[in-house]
Length: 226
Image (cartoon, rainbow, N blue to C red; front, side, top):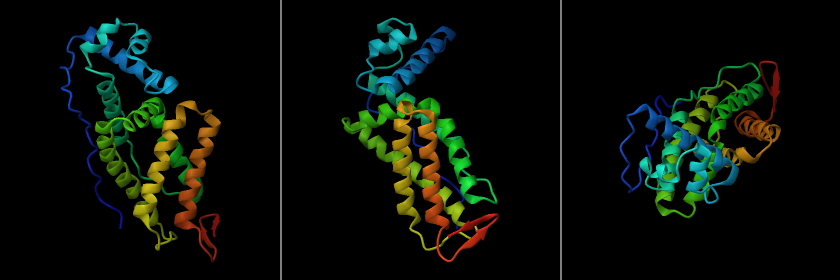
């Protein structure tokens, strides 16, 4: 049975206190420029190679202006990751019914990943940084628990299809696919669009074959399922 609710997305917090949010329009705009510059540079260079000086230069601000809004590059990354998680939380993860299940899955995943494209660099930086930062590593556990639950919810909805296979280990499969999705997001900023789209389609096919393909053949809409 499909779950009725999904857990609230985690709001990431580190031990560093967060500076007060800016109130003046000029400061709000400057902070937004810094975050935009960080998103782009993290995608181009990764976490370690994107220095605070490079971020402020890309944003067109003085190097010292960074510390008006963030205590460290770690905190800066956490703010960006929180923005991304909030964006993910707004994404409706309910595949639309389709006569052709495989095509429907491909379209569903392609649409979901298009929403994520602006944050490919943030995911790349996060996965790089959290390997060497214990505090970020603990936060990563919160993220993984949330996203795995969301992937499991999608799989449960798909398994409600009349021709879906029942004898499947959905929790284990959700964990595996969640790791694959994060890996794809982290590599997205360095991949050609056609290569990225091809991997998204392959991920959809993996889900399709796990949940629907078995012998003997069954027909779903206009499609034969093995």
